[in-house]
Image (cartoon, rainbow, N blue to C red; front, top):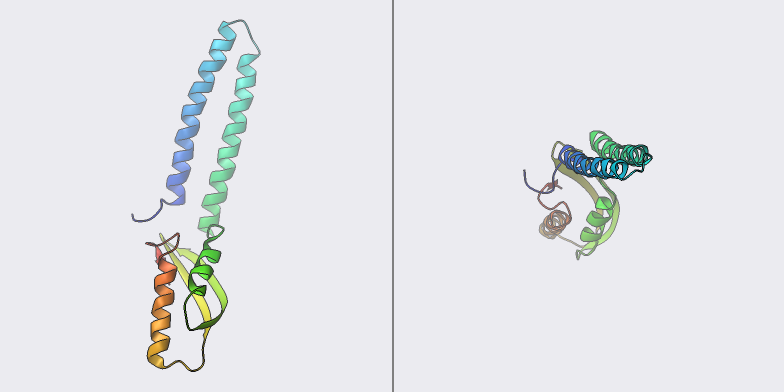
Length: 143
């Protein structure tokens, strides 16, 4: 799959990281109890719980945003910025994007200079597509 990994793969990476940190924290707790600090075990347990809750929050937010066709913050601005530097465009009135499977679908409403010919309008449209595809979601965008 080209481009950046999907939300489920990122969540799986978070899960693997929490597993490793949890194992390390358990060793620290056991070592603390062995040294004579009986409160080390419950304190480590609370820290592990907080870490798991944070990862669940991050993963859930990412997965639910993607499930509801949401895009990451900044993607709309990046597409708007990329298209805004193309000669012949007077105004960009709207940029919308949403996920369709593993592809990001973007719709850009632009106003062009009124004197442009049909061939020039087509050229500007292709330039907008190229600019949108060259951004942070380069290989997954369908403009």
